Length: 257
Ligand SMILES: Nc1ncnc2c1ncn2[C@@H]1O[C@H](COP(=O)(O)OP(=O)(O)OP(=O)(O)O)[C@@H](O)[C@H]1O
Image 1 (tube, rainbow, N blue to C red):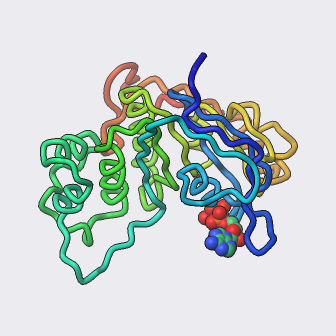
Image 2 (cartoon, rainbow, N blue to C red; image 1 turned 90 degrees about the horizontal axis):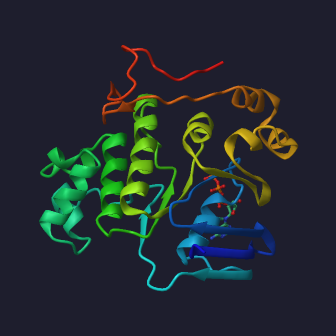
């Protein structure tokens, strides 16, 4: 039997008597990728914070595997703008040595930015830096809060692919929040649709037909997702260009009907 990295059993989080997360039960194993979707204010970040152990549940049980190493990619990188900080220094603050930091930066495609200032990175570069910082810890569990924000559309698909590859390499579990519904539906193993409580959950192709999903996101979104088939027959490089197996000669290779 596979050991759960994190288990939530009927977890609720209340602020001022209001349930922001309402009786959520989930279990995350090694190899899983779970994506939490839902409207603004649905409690997604609060749920992620609970998984991280930084938000205490008001009710219910949270169980984590012993010695669990978590790599976290936050929604925002808050830095003192007047403090000069290079990418190298930022990474070294993790407590890992330069070789480990450079290797993690290389894996997320930004090792060339070692000497750059973190204040001047593009949105996509910043997300890759944050991913490298999470990665350098060799996490059992990767927790990402909107990892593709500020990343252009090509870069988003590539970033989700990178997350899948990292899951395979580290044999870790992944839980993330995303608003990129089409990419989520194409690239995720399991989706949890949250609106305080879990409206529905399951595999992308199933939940897009779920009445609770349709009620939350509307018919238009549900219909466009329900007919979306993603036959990914190739790989992308970090710039989003198509490379490798099954490249049909420059075509995108995804079937969108
Ligand atoms: N520490 C807190 N104290 C009081 N209310 C809070 C606190 N943290 C979050 N909330 C409230 O809980 C609700 C859910 O917030 P949360 O950030 O979890 O939602 P979200 O689904 O991540 O939203 P978004 O998609 O907009 O990022 C919001 O109404 C928010 O104002």
